[in-house]
Length: 497
Image 1: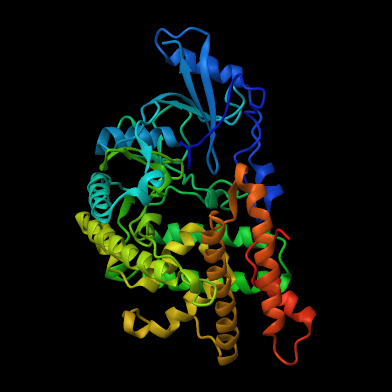
Image 2 (image 1 turned 90 degrees about the vertical axis):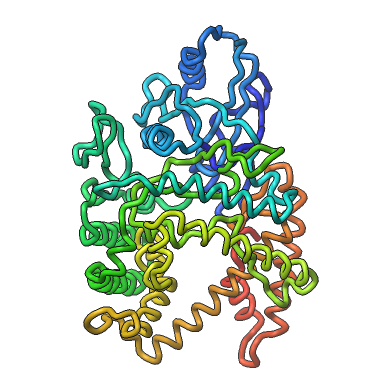
């Protein structure tokens, strides 16, 4: 239910504020992100619902802890004694360890509570992220093998359409595809499908009718491209930038329609229900035997998607850390060892994909095809540089991929030169971001725990000043100091100064 759980305050604590986000701050866009996470609702009404779910509980509450994640707020309550359908389905059909749902409301007003909510049993165990660094390599491999076997149960489920799971209730969506008497497939509930970005702030209100369910890839891609176009068109970017990106999206649509006719692509796009975010914070394990998985949380964006969508994702515990030879020179040996270990974890996870033939076939698809197709689904295609790079790679590999016809994307020499410059800049920013995340012990998006904020910010500002000075010293002969400062600000990944 939450992306990451930590104790903050308790119900009878004078500092207890159930409505505001208080667990951390961001080095980038902090005011917008914190403001977007404020929730106004009736806490007493929510507690009343929880009490009714607990047999024998009286109105007196022993403790109520607020725990916060990236997009949800969780209250762990101790008494004196879209996601709901997915949780129930995967528990019943695939024996996946998920918390039992006790009560819920999917209506924005939530009745007396005032918001959407789910009340579920507390997951036992500890979050994998809290013990991963204490585990030895063998335990890491054993855990990944266990997770692969859990996911195998999900992959064995068969579906006749793409979209999100819904209960067959009176208030189910108008457009649905039946599964059985209890469940159906309806519109995709992912953020991008409705015009929201990764921070849950809206970029463009997308009208209903473009979110599925879909019975074929052609309609799936057509609707996702249309959503991307609406998002780009309403973002408020310079007109030339908007026009260029809209043209790139149209080119992507042509390529994807051609890809959809190939056998390899069709075999890699079988409908598959998979966990949308296998981050170590969402996996709960037995602290004494970490290969025993006790619970998987955060299913709210789970959907039935083509198999190539989960095939491009690597869980964070198997990602290779980015190493900058200059910035990370003092820890190069340690990071190199981390990379070697991450490679072994990544290979183990890749091998687990073949426990599920649907996912295994998708992982065999040419990487450039997988990235382009999955990028449209995840909103990745809204980034002009990333999309240009993908389309340029498609143009270079078109003949070797066995796709009929001529690739619609044929960049000029000048276009390629500009793209290479943009990619170099993007890579520099990504490596700088990874370096700062390691140095400051913060998330890649700049999130820092509230209690560490005052400690981290002076170090952060010192790093920024050193980076600007380095850019000034190494500037080109025809560059002024102001030019170098502007260049530094473009490369610097966060807006806090």
